[in-house]
Image 1 (cartoon, rainbow, N blue to C red):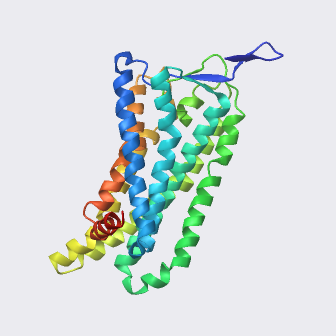
Image 2 (image 1 turned 90 degrees about the vertical axis):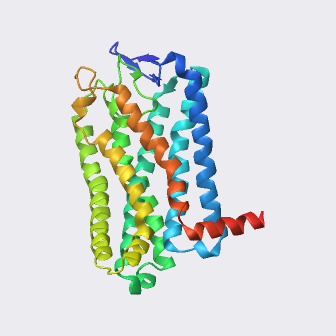
Image 3 (image 1 turned 30 degrees about the horizontal axis):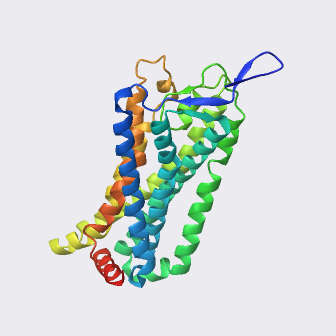
Length: 318
């Protein structure tokens, strides 16, 4: 839908989200697959969250951070998947400009939260492995609570300036988003305003949050690896590294998908460029939005003895 201004220019007030329109024969199978995946995400992360909350043995900083990660996985998939399921089932793919920007904001908010939370979890493992005698002092419950609240507040505020800039852009003529949700870069490509200042803000905020959290995570694991290598016993090395191996797996999945998707020049997203590949971007987005929340509960619980005991106690209670 377009709104005609006083200067006789048509401004977009609604967008068409193309989703997977180039695969018309797969609309029903895709709906079924995404529905099953979404239910698995909700069930798996809720089970982890409930186990941590109900078992006092898991009321430690590592599991408190993990419970926040479960809440986060449920939240950002719920920002995308219910609307995607609705569009696949009804083929009604219209979204208002306000709803599109709101979806973009919450997606960025939860993405920033995950970056910061993963960095905090890496630091927690660094303290536990490299400074075990000071762990209870450095990572007390009070400190843990302050850190968790700070993570959510910082992530909540970080995308605000970018979202305001995008909301003030003018969108005209082109109103088809070749994606399955309102991601920032495809949305910017539809604007007929000058987006140079918005792109600059993207890089600045990306450097402040993305690179800083990545460097903190990287440095933490460098120290952890050196500490593990200095352990003479092979059994000791294996036992020590197993306490952070699951988190390292999640970190590699997260940064592997996000860096592949977003750490590219914005010109590569232009349909005029030979390197532009919307389907490739959709696949990378799916890896980030679906694969990680599905795998997180499995990665953290399969080889975790404390979780197995917690689930056994929980099953007896139920």
